[in-house]
Image (cartoon, rainbow, N blue to C red; front, top):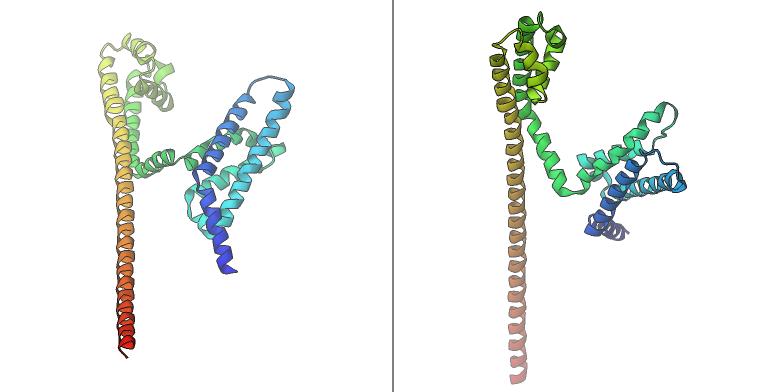
Length: 281
């Protein structure tokens, strides 16, 4: 009975992890993302108001069945994977009622598109690398926040009197400097009005842009790239360890086969010797 159950679990696991099943789920995720996007258009056709909700329910039912199959196959191991928890939460939000106080959950259905992260290994590697980069990014965020705070206070002290709409308070100054950091219209909307009263203001904005846009923000890119490389090297090491384990297992099996052949050879020699003895007698 236990052997039959283990055989069923192994077959079910192989089915869930097969490329065909994964591609089927991937296709449903993409289809569901498209249908949810179409629902944003103000079209009143019959197929639009009737067929799309039916398709949505069918897709959700398949996702729920997929989670059920994974629970049967993996059992307690299902809850040891963060990606399985992610899928469980997304599907749980999908099956909750979207009426009354839960009406906001209707807009959260598009979160199902994020299941592409858990289905596609390439996307999963990128997300895992980004999560690994968060500890290193915290120190960079702290440096950027300190630069922002000092620059916002300084800009408010220097330019608040002449440009109160841009630098009147600490909050307004921080928002304005954020626009400067993004380089979106900073020259015409920020620098030029300020320079009418402070001709030297260009130097302040130049230093701020160099420190934030060209220095600190590039540190984020460096940390993320380093995390991606580290993830790649970890995957390479894992593959090497798996290959070494496979080679060790192969050597062990070859040694066992050699030992069995040796034993069979010895048995055959003894059998031939006994037969010769019988023939002489």
